[in-house]
Image (tube, rainbow, N blue to C red; front, side, top):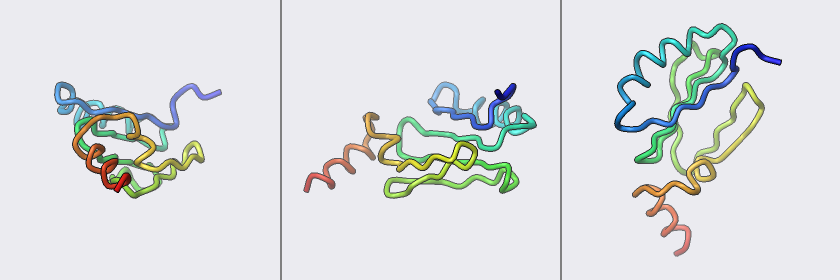
Length: 99
């Protein structure tokens, strides 16, 4: 059993964005066992994954992409992650899928 997380997932909101992207990010990437830090936008479709194996350089994922979470050996599509989220990007994506 882990005493510290290997993956952290943060959902960004307007009210916490500044703290999430600065103070918390720095604190999290300094957790020795942490392998991945995931930032999910709430108001539009964008997921940033920072990996220890990539020296914490972020990689962005959008609709149509799949993300492999190395630390837990799980692959999910961005569309699946946002499936129940209501924002303009998802509304447009769902309309295109129905056409």
